[in-house]
Length: 226
Image (cartoon, rainbow, N blue to C red; front, side, top):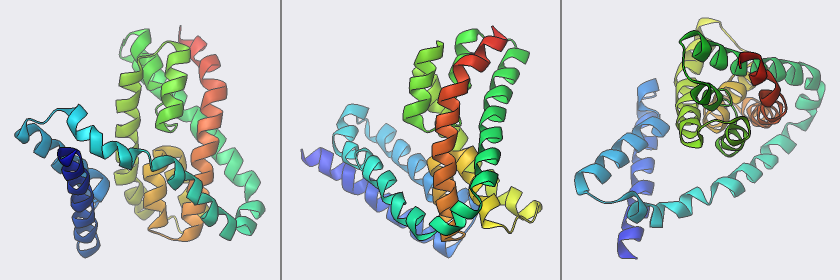
């Protein structure tokens, strides 16, 4: 029990420290969602602690994902009028983005000659992890590979997203929200909220719509590559 509590508080402490470091030096490579896992994984490996031992405490943080997601409803409510006004643009953009993510993932996997199992595992990577894993099981993928691909997608989108916003001079909070929510799911919401509340709210909607579209069309689209 003491070991579980130690790793729980250790994870929280590392994240808080990484957050303060990022606020002092807002560099892409110092984002807490990238720095924290690297430090924790290194610490676990050096200490020789098993994942099960670590997860006895850390699972309490994982259990907070669902209420944290529900809490996004507060932000959505605050900006409901803005989202209602731009509903069509958001839905069309996110829908196209979700379909493009499936086609590019499967298409590249097919182009490089990867097996059908790997291709099916990578296709739903832009959905949130629980839904992506469920879709992977339905279409014949490997859930473990899907989980890793989804994590990498979130981190990559969170890192590259700000560069795209800067290079293409994207000033619209609606466009920023669609960008981060569609391409980087929950990690994207975190990054979008750093810009403003509207971007974060739209990112939340984009994440949910992406998951829904992926769930509906991925099984059908994957038949095109079989």
